[in-house]
Amino acid sequence: ALMGRELSVQTQLKEIEDKRSKAQKDATKELEKQQKVLQVNAKVQANAAKYNFNGFETKHGLPSGLLSGVHMQEARGDASAVGPMTKYGTAKGGFQFLDGTAKRFGLTGDDVFDLGKSAEAAAKYFQYLYKKFGNWDEAISAYHAGEGNVAAGTGIGPINRQYVKNVKGYTAGVNGYTGSSKDFDSGMGDQTKYAQKTLDEISQLQSQFDTEAIQRSKERDEQINQATILG
Image (cartoon, rainbow, N blue to C red; front, side, top):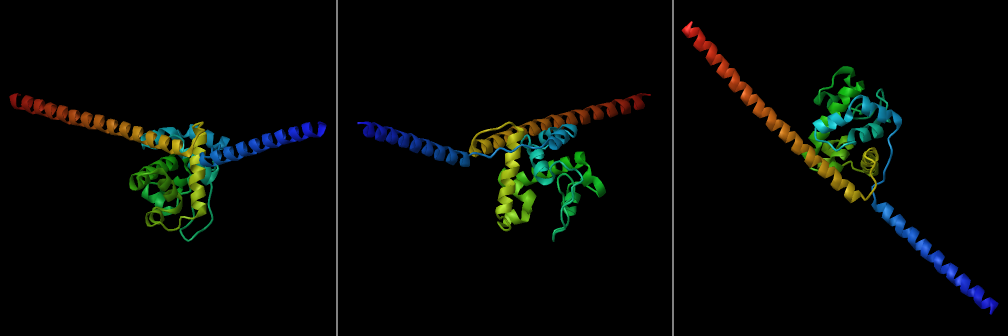
């Protein structure tokens, strides 16, 4: 009887162990589906606050936290970072601009080492890349591998794919996000649509203001001309 009870206990323990093992495996599979959340360091946090990365993101229609994510992945917060010499040149600064790309987006000389200027240039570049590819995975991939390679589907290996995951992971961390990658991607898309709507509204208001200003200027000129004729 005693041996029977021991066998029963062992069987129950085995069942519990099997259930726990299965639960752990299921949890691991679920975690693999989720966007890995990474944390930027204190240097990046300080730079983002000092140079108002969020302001550039809003101005150029980017998801919140993207510039911090890229700054962390590219330079770990080091504004004076200089990459190794490659066949494409040497990447420089907190956003690791190559000379040609820097020039395209308004950076000259040592501007690449100025975080305020380079952050806005990076924001402009991302706005361009998102409009070109229509999604953030390819836009981030192109920032790292080059837009030509992404458009052609060449030069996109495991390092580039990990780069995209890391940038998204840091961006998620900046936003205090936990959840599935699908939800995260959807959230980035929603942010972009909202930001674009805001930019469109600002543009419409500016256009309306400019039109009214031109009209007022014309009316004033007519009044001055009339006064001159009567005078």
